[in-house]
Image 1 (spheres, one colour):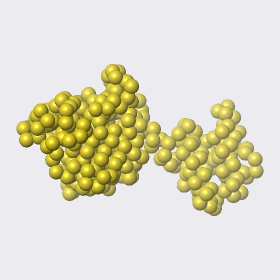
Image 2 (cartoon, helix red, strand yellow):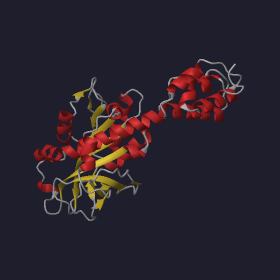
Image 3 (tube, helix red, strand yellow):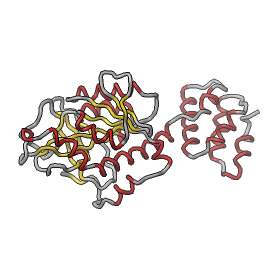
Image 4 (cartoon, helix red, strand yellow):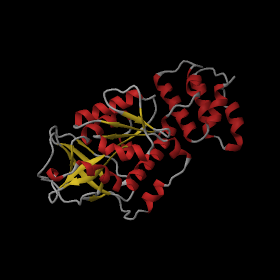
Amino acid sequence: MHETTHETTHETMNKSARGTTRESVNGAVNLVVAHRPEAAPLLDWFDLTESRPRGRFRCYQGGDGIALTISGTGAHNAAAAVRHLHERQPEAHRAWLNVGIAGHRGEPLGTGLLINRIEHRRSGERHWPPVPRLGLPGSSLVSVDKPETEYPEDAAYDMEAAGFFAEASRLIASDLVYVFKIVSDNRASPLAELDLRRVPELIRLREREIRAIVEHLRQRCARFASCHTMPDEYPLLLGKCHFSATRKAMLAGLCRRGRALGMQQRLHTLAKQRFRDAGALLQAAEAALAAPAQAREAATGETGEGPR
């Protein structure tokens, strides 16, 4: 087992779980589990109800940006379930979390592990999930095509994480894709002895950790969306002049910057003005976003030769 952070107390984890910032309220997280027993506690905690019409994979949605899908067994199904849930949802930035049980050579039953390395045994493909500062123990993980009963490596073993991570990281930045596993079997208590009726109990043992991870992802996703979601003023500004591909990218960057810095009103003011060409518009936007707060209106209305 590897420690994911120098923080060894629950202080950071509890702080994250208690977070009540506006960002955390707005952040969205998609949960992926393999089977219904793993999903049951999550459906209760986050008050999720099944979405209709039912598709290939059962999907659930809450009113606060949390959604869940049940993938079934295997990396291929996990990847397909990620795509299915994504395609059912309106376009938006969403973080992803895979929660489920896993075997491990030596970790005690019920241990929660934040996965920091994933290897797909059959393909050899490897992924490195992010390492958030939550004070949680970490582990590498091997995704296998059939249940592992020998536990040859000091790692967790599952059948879904490789497919889940590969697909989810195509939809959002990989540092917003986490994997959390709860140890269900090991050499002392092998898989053959696992009572599936105990699976919900194993998940419930780690309620505090799972809630903390979800809240952490919500906050990070909200910040990501704030920086990367294009403000409403972008298409208005884009329609004012002819933009080359390079200048279009520059305008997008300036609009994202304005949104991230809380200067969207300045962009709104610019969108009401007229400009000679794209260069003049970009010059005005740069000046508006660089101007001190007390000169806001002057900067957005009197920038060089741009507006007319």
